Amino acid sequence: STWGEVIMETMCAKTHDTCPLHGVHLDYQLAAAARKTPTDPIVTLLRDPVERTLSEFFFIRSPEGSITPFMDQWDFQNLTFLRLVRDEADDDKALDSFLHAWPEQPSFNRQVLYLAGFKRWGAALPFRWTGGEPQQREFLSVAKQHLDDVQAFGFTDCFVTSAAAMARVLGWGEATVTQMAARTHHRAQRKTIAAAGLRMHRGTCLALTAGDDQYGGVWRSFVDHRTVEEIERLNWADMELHRFARRQF
Image (cartoon, rainbow, N blue to C red):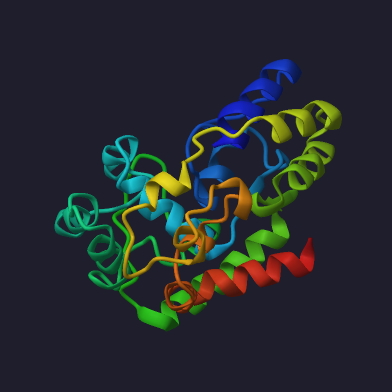
């Protein structure tokens, strides 16, 4: 990501801060355990759940994403599910599988899962939502507590403002961080190309054959409103966490 692989790498080297494992996605427990002292700051970025879900889906189907789901940090243990999503030639069928073939999959409400924390050093723990809504409510409660505990957080949906706010907390040069946040988009996906194969799930952006810039590069513009509503339903806990975070920001 731009924050972890560009901004953190640059600023940690410049300030001689210790920034362990900044190139991967850490859950809260791993981030807390990686600190050298209990007072070392933890910061995090949240994303609109629809944007995050569609981004993950299309990334899995990209050449780079064909390897990533097997990394411990993604927690996909269901190879049948991965093949249905990754190898299906029809984009609509693949998206249907991603949303409905495995109700327990860890992509749903992933931000609640990671902010609540679920891993320990030295062990890759396979995760799936086996407890249904009660389990998700429990994790949501813990995630909100942890969000209150972190030193700073932001949103990828307003990335430049968020990066500046986190820079102030970390004691980094705000102007430098803001400039990097505005000019760098690491791992950017070309949405018009990635979503071009959609037919049944096609949204306004593709129907009008518009470019990324016209719609601000927003994933939800590339799928129809029913798909957006279904993603919001399946990620209800992430939706609540996102609303909670926006009220605190």
